[in-house]
Length: 171
Image (cartoon, rainbow, N blue to C red; front, side, top):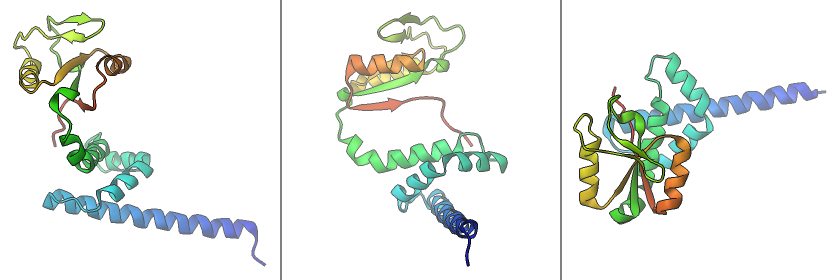
């Protein structure tokens, strides 16, 4: 007679093996995508990245990969999946959100309670260049002082697309 713990052990072992198999397939697909610049089954890879987010994050950091690598891959997959749909949204219906940490320490920008930091185009950082580029495309730019400010900006502008800016990932 098989006891309940034996059945549970078998179920957990099978589940663990299935998860390992899915993980290996996802790693192979990601490796292929990185080498060839062609993404195969991005929805599947994104599912695996979401499902196994914390174990993958810990694993990649333990084997010496850069912190945030899983986040970068996840963002790239989301961008790839949504590119066609998002590219149809007119520029004037988009906003660019930049974290205030991109500013220099001696930045003369003034904090506006409704618009975030207002860049003075002093040339001490690259934010002024981004703002000029976005002005040409009619994209509104907000330098966000904190996470809670994002909700305020979204309520204020009602964008159809949000571009999140930040420090570029470099290997």
